[in-house]
Length: 132
Image 1 (cartoon, one colour):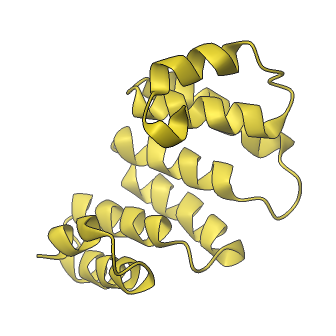
Image 2 (spheres, helix red, strand yellow; image 1 turned 180 degrees about the horizontal axis):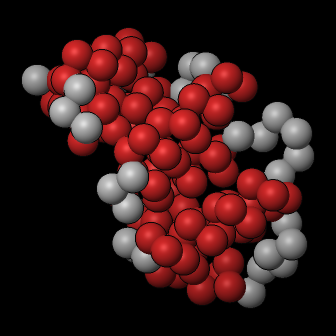
């Protein structure tokens, strides 16, 4: 459901899933985030981070995005940097870094990260739009 942008059915399905599995908690966080239920997404991502095996960083990126949506860009940057150490070629993380710096009016840094995101995924228009 999440891949089809059908978040409400995803939440219903994940509500019946075994949330002791970090992937179920991560999926729940993603669905809640897309449904704009930011506080609940934060809890799901924190739980997923705590349960994730070593080296798994996707929940950290979701957590960072919730921080950004809560207008906490400095905290989001710290989480993104942690995730990027283990997954340095993830374009969305660089886009979110750019967004964070944009929120803090640090435009040179924001432009750097938007460029990096667009280089890693040349088909994704959003970083190019924000760069412009």
